[in-house]
Image (cartoon, rainbow, N blue to C red; front, side, top):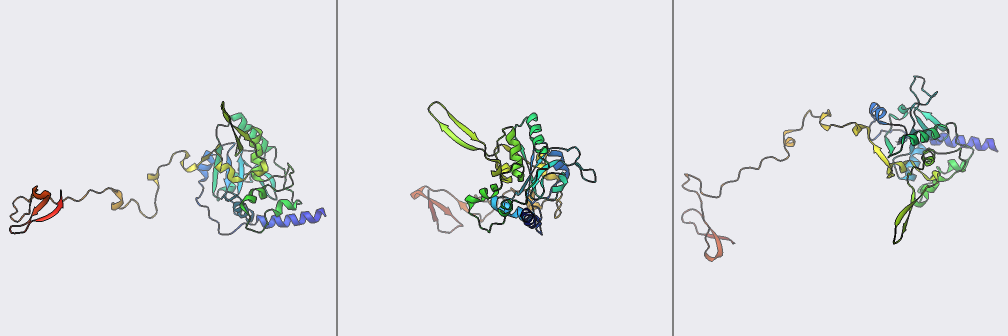
Length: 304
Protein backbone atom coordinates (compact mmCIF):
# COMPACT_ATOMS: atom_id res chain seq x y z
CA UNK A 1 0.00 0.00 0.00
CA UNK A 2 2.80 2.36 0.92
CA UNK A 3 4.55 1.75 -2.41
CA UNK A 4 1.34 2.45 -4.34
CA UNK A 5 0.76 5.74 -2.51
CA UNK A 6 4.36 6.77 -3.07
CA UNK A 7 4.06 6.04 -6.80
CA UNK A 8 0.84 8.04 -7.11
CA UNK A 9 2.39 10.88 -5.14
CA UNK A 10 5.40 11.00 -7.45
CA UNK A 11 3.17 11.11 -10.52
CA UNK A 12 1.17 14.01 -9.11
CA UNK A 13 4.37 15.79 -8.12
CA UNK A 14 5.79 15.40 -11.61
CA UNK A 15 2.60 16.84 -13.09
CA UNK A 16 2.55 19.83 -10.73
CA UNK A 17 6.24 20.64 -11.28
CA UNK A 18 5.95 20.85 -15.05
CA UNK A 19 6.88 24.32 -16.29
CA UNK A 20 4.41 26.40 -18.29
CA UNK A 21 5.49 27.79 -21.65
CA UNK A 22 5.76 31.36 -22.91
CA UNK A 23 6.73 32.94 -19.60
CA UNK A 24 8.26 36.41 -19.55
CA UNK A 25 8.85 38.36 -16.33
CA UNK A 26 7.15 41.73 -15.93
CA UNK A 27 10.53 43.35 -15.38
CA UNK A 28 13.93 41.69 -15.91
CA UNK A 29 16.23 41.26 -12.94
CA UNK A 30 19.58 43.01 -12.71
CA UNK A 31 21.80 40.24 -11.26
CA UNK A 32 24.52 42.56 -10.01
CA UNK A 33 22.11 44.93 -8.28
CA UNK A 34 20.22 41.99 -6.77
CA UNK A 35 23.44 40.47 -5.41
CA UNK A 36 24.53 43.82 -4.03
CA UNK A 37 21.35 44.68 -2.13
CA UNK A 38 19.96 41.41 -0.73
CA UNK A 39 21.01 40.63 2.85
CA UNK A 40 20.69 37.75 5.35
CA UNK A 41 17.15 37.54 6.71
CA UNK A 42 15.55 38.92 3.54
CA UNK A 43 12.64 37.02 2.01
CA UNK A 44 12.84 36.61 -1.76
CA UNK A 45 9.41 36.26 -3.38
CA UNK A 46 9.26 34.57 -6.79
CA UNK A 47 6.65 34.48 -9.52
CA UNK A 48 6.91 30.82 -10.47
CA UNK A 49 6.10 29.25 -13.83
CA UNK A 50 5.09 25.69 -12.96
CA UNK A 51 1.58 24.29 -12.83
CA UNK A 52 1.56 24.37 -9.05
CA UNK A 53 2.72 28.01 -9.16
CA UNK A 54 -0.32 28.93 -11.24
CA UNK A 55 -2.64 27.19 -8.80
CA UNK A 56 -1.01 28.84 -5.78
CA UNK A 57 -1.30 32.25 -7.44
CA UNK A 58 -5.00 31.61 -8.00
CA UNK A 59 -5.62 30.39 -4.46
CA UNK A 60 -3.73 33.32 -2.94
CA UNK A 61 -4.91 35.95 -5.46
CA UNK A 62 -1.32 37.11 -5.87
CA UNK A 63 1.49 36.98 -8.42
CA UNK A 64 3.85 35.42 -5.86
CA UNK A 65 3.86 31.63 -5.75
CA UNK A 66 7.16 30.86 -4.00
CA UNK A 67 9.30 32.29 -1.21
CA UNK A 68 12.92 31.64 -0.25
CA UNK A 69 15.00 32.91 2.69
CA UNK A 70 18.36 34.52 1.96
CA UNK A 71 20.92 33.36 4.53
CA UNK A 72 24.22 34.15 2.81
CA UNK A 73 26.85 31.62 1.64
CA UNK A 74 26.22 28.18 3.11
CA UNK A 75 29.27 26.13 3.97
CA UNK A 76 29.61 23.03 1.81
CA UNK A 77 26.83 24.00 -0.61
CA UNK A 78 27.79 25.32 -4.03
CA UNK A 79 27.21 24.90 -7.74
CA UNK A 80 29.70 22.98 -9.94
CA UNK A 81 31.06 26.33 -11.16
CA UNK A 82 31.73 27.42 -7.58
CA UNK A 83 28.72 29.73 -7.07
CA UNK A 84 27.69 29.42 -3.41
CA UNK A 85 24.21 28.48 -2.32
CA UNK A 86 22.66 31.38 -0.41
CA UNK A 87 18.93 30.53 -0.32
CA UNK A 88 16.91 28.16 1.84
CA UNK A 89 13.63 27.04 0.30
CA UNK A 90 11.03 24.29 0.56
CA UNK A 91 9.69 22.84 -2.67
CA UNK A 92 7.17 20.15 -3.39
CA UNK A 93 8.89 16.89 -4.22
CA UNK A 94 12.26 18.08 -2.91
CA UNK A 95 11.64 19.33 0.60
CA UNK A 96 13.91 21.87 2.28
CA UNK A 97 17.03 22.51 0.22
CA UNK A 98 19.61 25.14 -0.64
CA UNK A 99 19.89 27.08 -3.90
CA UNK A 100 22.05 29.76 -5.55
CA UNK A 101 20.69 33.24 -6.16
CA UNK A 102 21.16 32.82 -9.91
CA UNK A 103 18.35 30.25 -9.90
CA UNK A 104 15.82 33.09 -9.99
CA UNK A 105 17.60 35.64 -12.18
CA UNK A 106 15.17 34.92 -15.03
CA UNK A 107 12.07 35.33 -12.81
CA UNK A 108 10.11 38.27 -11.52
CA UNK A 109 11.18 38.65 -7.88
CA UNK A 110 10.70 40.93 -4.89
CA UNK A 111 12.80 41.45 -1.76
CA UNK A 112 10.93 41.75 1.55
CA UNK A 113 13.12 42.90 4.44
CA UNK A 114 12.14 42.65 8.13
CA UNK A 115 12.25 46.12 9.64
CA UNK A 116 14.30 46.65 12.79
CA UNK A 117 15.33 43.02 13.18
CA UNK A 118 18.54 42.88 15.25
CA UNK A 119 21.70 41.25 13.98
CA UNK A 120 21.46 38.49 16.59
CA UNK A 121 17.87 37.68 15.63
CA UNK A 122 18.78 37.64 11.94
CA UNK A 123 21.41 35.04 12.68
CA UNK A 124 18.88 33.01 14.67
CA UNK A 125 16.33 33.12 11.83
CA UNK A 126 18.91 32.05 9.25
CA UNK A 127 20.34 29.31 11.47
CA UNK A 128 16.87 27.89 12.11
CA UNK A 129 16.25 27.57 8.37
CA UNK A 130 19.69 26.08 7.66
CA UNK A 131 19.20 23.45 10.34
CA UNK A 132 16.08 22.24 8.55
CA UNK A 133 17.80 21.48 5.26
CA UNK A 134 16.95 17.89 4.39
CA UNK A 135 13.42 17.95 5.77
CA UNK A 136 11.31 16.36 3.07
CA UNK A 137 7.92 16.56 1.45
CA UNK A 138 6.05 13.30 1.94
CA UNK A 139 4.79 12.20 -1.46
CA UNK A 140 2.87 9.40 0.24
CA UNK A 141 0.53 11.95 1.79
CA UNK A 142 -1.93 12.33 -1.07
CA UNK A 143 -3.89 14.97 0.87
CA UNK A 144 -0.89 17.30 0.66
CA UNK A 145 -0.78 16.91 -3.12
CA UNK A 146 -4.46 16.58 -3.99
CA UNK A 147 -5.26 19.97 -2.43
CA UNK A 148 -3.71 21.49 -5.58
CA UNK A 149 -5.86 19.39 -7.91
CA UNK A 150 -9.29 20.43 -6.65
CA UNK A 151 -11.48 21.56 -9.60
CA UNK A 152 -11.78 25.34 -9.90
CA UNK A 153 -13.34 27.70 -9.02
CA UNK A 154 -12.84 27.60 -5.25
CA UNK A 155 -14.82 29.95 -2.96
CA UNK A 156 -12.60 32.71 -1.63
CA UNK A 157 -13.16 31.83 2.04
CA UNK A 158 -11.75 28.32 1.49
CA UNK A 159 -8.62 29.22 -0.52
CA UNK A 160 -6.30 29.92 2.41
CA UNK A 161 -7.49 26.80 4.21
CA UNK A 162 -6.65 24.71 1.16
CA UNK A 163 -3.04 25.88 1.37
CA UNK A 164 -2.98 24.87 5.04
CA UNK A 165 -4.25 21.32 4.51
CA UNK A 166 -1.82 18.51 5.14
CA UNK A 167 -0.51 15.93 7.56
CA UNK A 168 0.65 18.41 10.18
CA UNK A 169 4.06 16.70 10.31
CA UNK A 170 6.59 19.38 11.37
CA UNK A 171 9.21 17.83 9.10
CA UNK A 172 7.00 18.29 6.01
CA UNK A 173 6.43 21.92 5.09
CA UNK A 174 5.84 24.34 2.24
CA UNK A 175 8.01 27.38 1.46
CA UNK A 176 6.12 30.08 3.34
CA UNK A 177 5.55 27.83 6.37
CA UNK A 178 9.30 27.26 6.75
CA UNK A 179 10.06 31.00 6.70
CA UNK A 180 7.14 31.80 9.03
CA UNK A 181 8.45 29.28 11.55
CA UNK A 182 11.93 30.81 11.36
CA UNK A 183 10.64 34.30 12.15
CA UNK A 184 8.35 32.87 14.82
CA UNK A 185 11.40 31.69 16.76
CA UNK A 186 12.37 35.33 17.47
CA UNK A 187 8.73 36.45 17.78
CA UNK A 188 8.90 38.66 14.71
CA UNK A 189 5.38 39.38 13.35
CA UNK A 190 4.27 38.78 9.78
CA UNK A 191 0.47 39.07 9.75
CA UNK A 192 -0.67 38.44 13.32
CA UNK A 193 -4.30 38.46 14.26
CA UNK A 194 -5.07 41.57 16.29
CA UNK A 195 -7.61 41.73 19.12
CA UNK A 196 -8.38 45.27 20.21
CA UNK A 197 -9.03 45.70 23.92
CA UNK A 198 -10.46 49.00 25.06
CA UNK A 199 -11.27 50.45 28.44
CA UNK A 200 -11.50 53.82 30.12
CA UNK A 201 -7.92 53.63 31.26
CA UNK A 202 -6.16 52.07 28.30
CA UNK A 203 -6.52 50.56 24.88
CA UNK A 204 -4.09 47.97 23.62
CA UNK A 205 -3.61 45.51 20.78
CA UNK A 206 -2.98 41.88 21.58
CA UNK A 207 -1.05 40.05 18.85
CA UNK A 208 -1.82 36.41 18.16
CA UNK A 209 0.66 34.35 16.17
CA UNK A 210 -1.03 32.55 13.30
CA UNK A 211 -0.29 28.91 12.65
CA UNK A 212 2.70 28.75 10.30
CA UNK A 213 0.82 26.57 7.82
CA UNK A 214 -1.61 29.44 7.16
CA UNK A 215 1.03 31.76 5.70
CA UNK A 216 1.38 32.37 1.99
CA UNK A 217 4.20 33.96 -0.05
CA UNK A 218 2.14 37.13 -0.59
CA UNK A 219 1.83 37.67 3.19
CA UNK A 220 5.42 38.89 3.34
CA UNK A 221 4.60 41.41 0.60
CA UNK A 222 1.54 42.87 2.31
CA UNK A 223 2.90 42.63 5.86
CA UNK A 224 3.24 46.04 7.55
CA UNK A 225 6.43 44.80 9.22
CA UNK A 226 8.42 44.04 6.05
CA UNK A 227 9.97 46.69 3.83
CA UNK A 228 9.94 46.30 0.04
CA UNK A 229 13.48 46.71 -1.32
CA UNK A 230 13.86 47.38 -5.04
CA UNK A 231 17.42 46.85 -6.34
CA UNK A 232 16.99 49.31 -9.22
CA UNK A 233 16.46 52.30 -6.89
CA UNK A 234 18.03 51.25 -3.58
CA UNK A 235 21.45 52.66 -4.47
CA UNK A 236 20.22 55.63 -6.47
CA UNK A 237 18.29 56.01 -9.69
CA UNK A 238 18.65 58.70 -12.37
CA UNK A 239 16.01 58.52 -15.05
CA UNK A 240 17.92 61.05 -17.21
CA UNK A 241 20.76 58.55 -17.60
CA UNK A 242 18.55 55.95 -19.30
CA UNK A 243 19.31 55.19 -22.94
CA UNK A 244 16.11 54.93 -24.95
CA UNK A 245 16.07 52.94 -28.17
CA UNK A 246 13.56 55.09 -30.08
CA UNK A 247 14.78 58.67 -29.52
CA UNK A 248 17.95 60.21 -28.17
CA UNK A 249 16.18 63.22 -26.67
CA UNK A 250 12.57 64.39 -26.28
CA UNK A 251 10.92 66.22 -29.20
CA UNK A 252 10.73 70.00 -29.18
CA UNK A 253 7.05 70.09 -28.26
CA UNK A 254 7.72 67.93 -25.20
CA UNK A 255 10.85 69.76 -24.08
CA UNK A 256 8.86 72.78 -22.84
CA UNK A 257 5.54 71.70 -21.33
CA UNK A 258 4.53 75.33 -20.80
CA UNK A 259 5.12 77.24 -24.07
CA UNK A 260 4.82 81.02 -24.09
CA UNK A 261 1.30 82.34 -24.69
CA UNK A 262 0.74 84.13 -28.05
CA UNK A 263 0.76 87.93 -27.96
CA UNK A 264 -2.69 89.47 -27.55
CA UNK A 265 -3.98 92.08 -30.00
CA UNK A 266 -4.21 95.47 -28.29
CA UNK A 267 -7.71 96.73 -27.61
CA UNK A 268 -6.87 100.42 -28.10
CA UNK A 269 -6.35 102.24 -31.42
CA UNK A 270 -3.08 101.42 -33.13
CA UNK A 271 -0.58 104.23 -33.56
CA UNK A 272 -0.78 105.82 -36.98
CA UNK A 273 -3.82 103.79 -38.02
CA UNK A 274 -6.43 106.00 -39.57
CA UNK A 275 -9.00 103.25 -39.64
CA UNK A 276 -8.40 101.97 -36.11
CA UNK A 277 -11.44 101.18 -34.02
CA UNK A 278 -12.26 103.67 -31.31
CA UNK A 279 -13.17 101.92 -28.10
CA UNK A 280 -14.68 103.97 -25.33
CA UNK A 281 -16.52 103.37 -22.14
CA UNK A 282 -19.77 105.27 -21.74
CA UNK A 283 -21.74 105.26 -18.60
CA UNK A 284 -24.99 106.29 -20.25
CA UNK A 285 -27.67 103.77 -19.55
CA UNK A 286 -25.25 101.56 -17.71
CA UNK A 287 -24.07 99.96 -20.97
CA UNK A 288 -20.67 99.48 -22.49
CA UNK A 289 -20.70 101.04 -25.98
CA UNK A 290 -18.23 100.23 -28.71
CA UNK A 291 -17.94 102.72 -31.55
CA UNK A 292 -16.62 101.33 -34.78
CA UNK A 293 -15.57 103.15 -37.88
CA UNK A 294 -17.05 106.49 -38.69
CA UNK A 295 -20.73 106.22 -39.45
CA UNK A 296 -21.22 102.91 -37.72
CA UNK A 297 -24.09 102.58 -35.26
CA UNK A 298 -23.16 102.02 -31.62
CA UNK A 299 -23.80 98.48 -30.31
CA UNK A 300 -24.64 97.70 -26.71
CA UNK A 301 -22.60 94.67 -25.65
CA UNK A 302 -23.23 93.99 -22.04
CA UNK A 303 -24.34 95.59 -18.86
CA UNK A 304 -21.55 96.86 -16.67
